[in-house]
Image 1: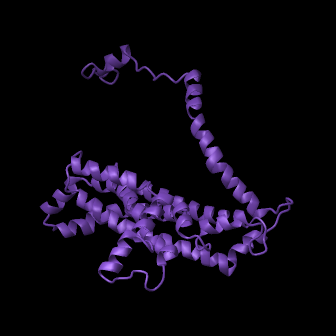
Image 2 (image 1 turned 180 degrees about the vertical axis):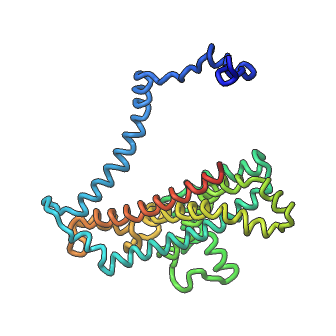
Image 3 (image 1 turned 120 degrees about the horizontal axis):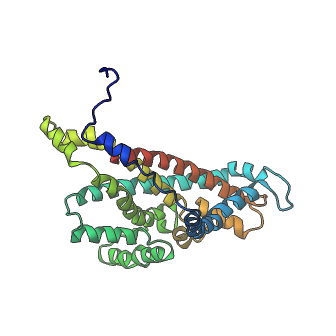
Amino acid sequence: MSLATAPAPEQDGVEHSARHHPRVAPAKPSNRRRRLAYVGLTPFAAYVLIFLALPTILAVVTGFFSDDGTLTFDNVTGLFTPTILATFGSSFWLSGVTAVIGAVVGAIICYAMLGTRVGGLLRTVIESAASVLAQFGGVMLAFAFIATIGVQGLVTVILRDTFGIDIFADGVWLYQVPGLILPYVYFQVPLMVITFLPALTALRPQWAEASATLGGTRFAYWRHIAAPVLTPAFLGSLLLLFANAFSSFATAAALISQGSQIVPLQIRSALVSETVLGRENMAGALALGMIVVMVVVMWAYSVLQSRTSRWQQ
């Protein structure tokens, strides 16, 4: 037998093991297990269908159709009237201001929490409080602010009678759009802590050590390494706060009893009245505009989150 035709020697028994012990393909899930998995998804699918898909379809249908079922664009063109544009402008302004304030303050709190021990008492208390306060909204939050800094609130009376400071000297701003900033920031900051803290704690210590080894200062590390890495997560959290404020209704409805100065209150006015600005089904068109804004925000948020998860891996 020549060297050209001689079989190659076995390397550490690898060839022998592969010949006598072939790899066993992983077993595929049976049809029964697949059916059980689909059954487990049924409650979630029903929730999405009833509370997300069906309202979206109704908003689109009522926005483009009249009461008699004929196709019309009068409701959509009504979105470009000065009153509706001013309402959307107020909602964008309120959501943007509260989102920026909540994002900045929440990011500072997250940075301060880096000095606490993971799983320690202080961090656990802060995370638990943030989870609770982020959901503390609606009528209860409005009542808390009315009882605290309302016209006859505790803080208002103390400042007026003791220190001679009248916080409502220029008008009762609490019951207008500017007055919604404080209640909205109240639940925006905890929401920022919940969403941004995981990204901040995911920064690898090796990056700071490598920067220090190469002679970089702490400021240089945050400017050239940490800040570019955290930017997608910060912007994603900012968009989430914007969407949260843009869709909030109960707190604004409890504080602003007159007028429809933001989109959710305008939708309520359109639902309780037969016609708005001489148009039928204006609520559907307003909801359609609100859905478009939310879809754009959700798309941008998903893009930023995908970039965030890429560097975390």
